[in-house]
Length: 543
Image 1 (spheres, helix red, strand yellow):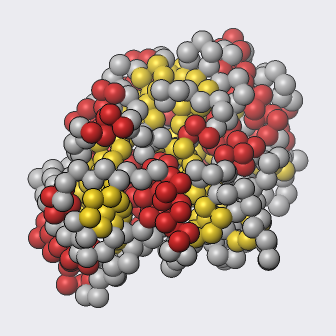
Image 2: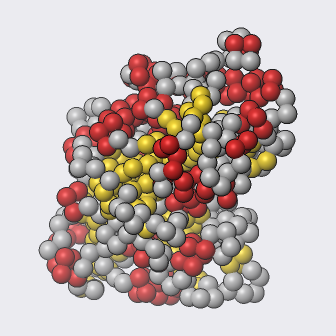
Image 3: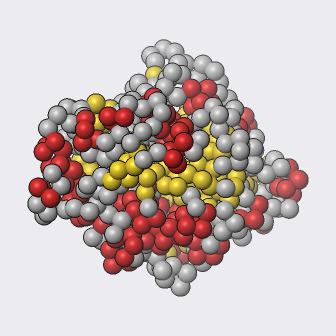
């Protein structure tokens, strides 16, 4: 085997079943970029950022995600999110993928996840494509040359986009591409898809089972920042709710923007060493941090160039609406250097309620927090997906259902316990509509939402009076500096109060229907944290 870039020994790949003449180990980003360009697998933008096209798959393929069913995964919540595959079929597919890689150039990256040293997990990633390796170098935490000398992996990620299984039904999978986690062998096997997010989310999904069951750590799909006084804030929210925007605060340092753990010692740490941000409609005005992070060392995916130029047209979604960029977290200026902090004080559940029902801000009890955490509500609005002409409720358990191997109630119970132990406040923040639903009302001003969060972080809402929402049971502040008091109670912004009540009961019913599948595993406290009134109740009971 050819010795390239400090290759430890030829045996290091043979023990994974891969026999090849050329392997590139721990190349620098600029070297991976050069190889990608030489192989005509990407192109550079005007400022020298590498851009690639991920081919057929421009997003994850959740129907093709599997977990090996064995003794380790006996507590997994099996269903449409977590689909089983047998150990025997995994072994056969693994052998077929490694046979495919034999004789090919491969790229190896050694790094780790979990920024808190106590929970560090070393990951070796072996990829078919150089730019896949570039992505992992951006997203996983990076080791020093000295640390690399004694590197021993705990998990292996094997990524072969060029392999497509011709007989999927023979191995218990759906089609040619697949992403499989084997917790006993500690392997993430990805094939048939070049979408880089499969590697990131594969390891995130693994941590979502390992950390709560082995380490007593709550894994969270969230962003987090820390203030000058050392108080940590956590932001949960699905796409379009403002999670990235609202966690970027010039007066607070960013811990991370997507995946974190909350330890028994009350430390919040980033899983990653980078950011993976959407860039559709990106501008320097809308998202200055992301825009300025797109420079050499970053990796753009599936963007379109303006004809005859090296300039990216961020408005062009002709390949996909899911255009992306990955970059090391140090491409952002205002970051927490070690990527972890103590003392969580406030948690924000962000939702974009297009029905205009939920208050702009409300305070949750532990039971309500667990209920809304399990629910993971936001709304899809017209134009976001084909066929949607009016708002549609959208629920994703724990604000990250596709990546959660355990029953959502298990994570919610952990959250409730940590809330009580640390005396943390949990807030539901609606960044959606007031004064009526989408098409009638208007979107809540970002300025007002920022004011609410700032006042909460300063502790200013501790001493104000609250009133209870009659249908959802949420505690709504009567006053918040910088925010018109009349919008704090959403009913007061509707011209027709009866229409508001009707819409609120309709949304409450959607919550109840969604929660039915979780109720058997949820405690009485969590169940009672839901809306007080369903649409079966008479409307005049709240008038």
